[in-house]
Image 1 (cartoon, rainbow, N blue to C red):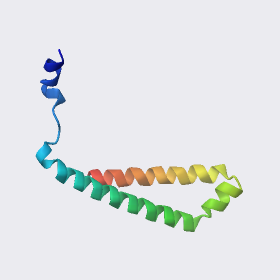
Image 2 (tube, one colour):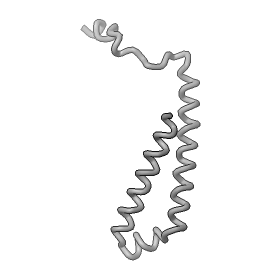
Image 3 (spheres, one colour):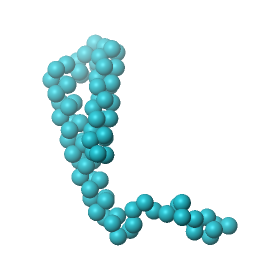
Image 4 (tube, rainbow, N blue to C red):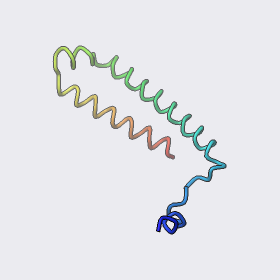
Length: 84
């Protein structure tokens, strides 16, 4: 039973093992670039709003929701740009 499942072509690898290293290196490069852009975006937002003071000290829930929404939007844009 297990042998018939493993021979099924639907469970084949998308990337062949020969090209796996190239794909992994490319993926890691794009991950690094995405994290750098995300950090830059967070740095810009932290300069626009005093995030730490407003959220932690003043308990401004609305600003936390807005900042979180902006970060999710930036992450979606970066993911779409990386994917092509």
